[in-house]
Length: 161
View 1 (tube, one colour):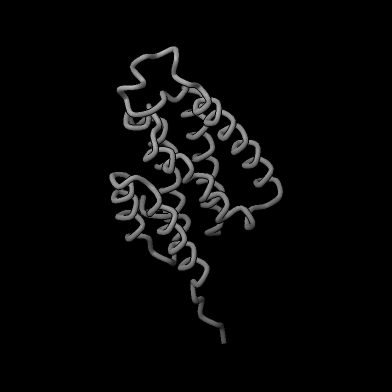
View 2: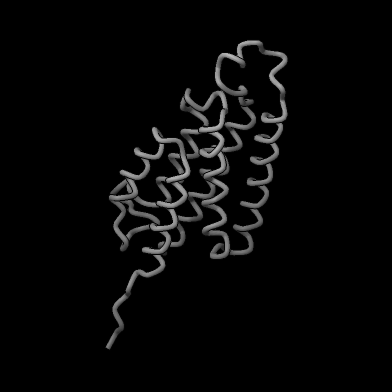
């Protein structure tokens, strides 16, 4: 007799993801929560037939931080969105192999360094910042977010195996 899988870990991860996404700005939050509602616990981490799985959502968030014009400047609302990737990493990192964790730690450090460098810029070189509602982010910061998100999503997908 084989014990049926309960999917407790997957349910817990989905619940934790909801909590993390709820810290994002309202516009982003709605889009990602809608996708998260469609996640099937049996294929929670990697569903090849759908873009509604945890790894796909992490991937999309990382790439949206790079490509969405709404993230070219950072203010109070978007800062939480940038911190989301780190929260996702904290949620899953204990389950990654040592190799994957070392790789992700390096990417996370690069991401944090680039983001902090952009935040430390007082905007004095661009007078338009005062009208944008935030500081302009460097291409380095947005690219680091995308790279970190891409690799994190790949490693989360492996949890399905």
